[in-house]
Amino acid sequence: MNATIYLRAASTARTRYLRATSIARTRNAVRIGALGAVMAGFILAASPAHADRIEKHFPVQNKPKITVRNSSGRIQVKAWTKNEVMVAWTNASGKTVVETEQAGNRVEVAARASEGGVSADDSKTDFEITVPVESELNVRTDSGNVTVDSVHGDMTFDTVGANLQLSDVDGYMVVKTIDGSLVCNRCSGKLEANSISGNVQMIEPTLDSVRVQTSSGNIMFDGSFLSRGIYIMKNFSGTIEVHFSSSDSFDVNATSLKGDVINQATFKPDTHGSSHPASKWGHSLFGTMNDGHAKVELSSFSGTIKILKRD
Amino acid sequence: MQCEQFEQILEQQDDGALPKPALAHLEACETCRALTADFGAIHDMALELGAEEIAPPERVWISLRNQLEAEGLIHDEQAAPRSASHASRGWWAVFQRPAIAGAFLGLALAAAATVSYLSNSPQTALDSQLTLQQEASSVPSADSVFKEEVLTVGIDSIPELQRQDTAVTNSIRRNLQLVDNLIAICEKSVREQPDNQMAREYLYGAYQQKAELLATAMNRSMTGGLQ
Image (cartoon, rainbow over all chains, first blue to last red; front, top):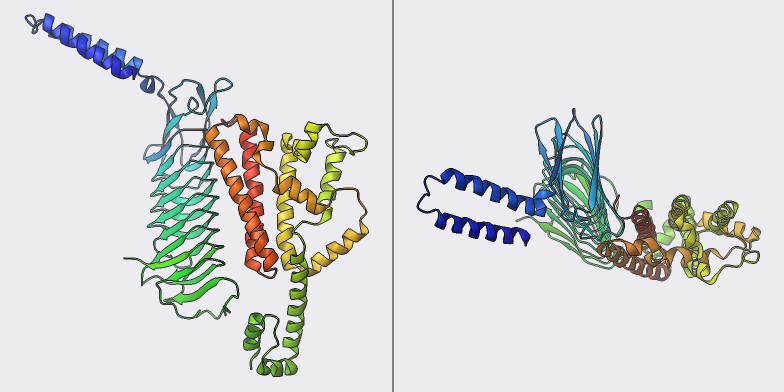
């Protein structure tokens, strides 16, 4: 709001100034330029979002470990090729203090209220963090979105309601959230995710170990099952949706105690010698696709399990 | 009939009589006779367990109470009657001490694990029942403590959390209610189908989720939201 007012004022002042000096426009070009620069500086200074942006740089060696503690606000983590961690933050209210610490390859960033009784809105702090591609991350926040792009390394995330989006990451990822959602785009490595009411989506993953559990959230896996991979997905009442292609090779064990199991695959009986007597409780499906190189376990209490053919 | 076929029939058979070919095999096969006897014992035990409320062994609460008394955090009610407000907060007051809170939640998880373990081990359940008969104690019954102090506790009992970010508090409150509902649904299922292992696993998982959710709530309240 303030920035808009200052911009209008600056524009009006500049227009008046130009009218008054139209005759000597050429001669005064340098002076107008100077005035414009002063105005621009004034506008920038009046804009809290720009005024509070602070940036720090930490030189690191290979594979640093970065820990971020925040309460509310956006956290964006990106990778670059420099051996340096860059942390920039913005706190519009100015009521949050961000403390940073470096000890060798360990960089810690924590936001805390500068005074008591700071409201959630005032404590909102947005972070932009750029790290070497090979980095470890440890992020804890309550609300606000967390995005991580192209980082390779182990990562842990602990959130209450914050949504998490991981793209092109590789490593051992552990996610714990209460009702935040997780979207994993082209993730590689291992994923452990635990939520109560959040949804979990894995899109085009190349994960060889998946352990995902949510109570009322939905789970969606749309990717290939890697040879020797283990994929365990469990919920209470949401939908579990797994997409397969005809070239996939996996054993499946799907059970919903009070819900349905919808299957579009043609499975043959387990070829690995295990017998799977039909459970007298709920709906179950056991079978093998191709050589059964991966193991897929899907389990729900009252939700629907869908095993769908990829288009 | 082969043993494997017999096992499948046995597993699918409820309380009815076995078909004739299976009976013939049973007569001839000692291994399958032993298996049938085990199945019968497990089934009977599961019915007994299901008829009772799900609760951890009494000794869990005895050791917890002893520890809290030793640290002077709780006193015998007759010696030091509680005030009205203290009484309403119950054992939850000890959660103001982080270390004890952690220990309590650890025990809650252990209790939940025990519930799960009991479902797999009827003999252990019998042993614990025998032990209980020998232990004379004035502590509240395991069932009442478990119900009142673990299952019915909510974030209202964590005063600091009320002053935190409303969205966070609401999120925790909403999810706590959700987990309580899951526990209720799972308990009903276990009562109705005592030998349903999957229902028991979900019940165990729901207990564990509740303990973890409470731990998160306490953690957030102790660190004041902003860390």
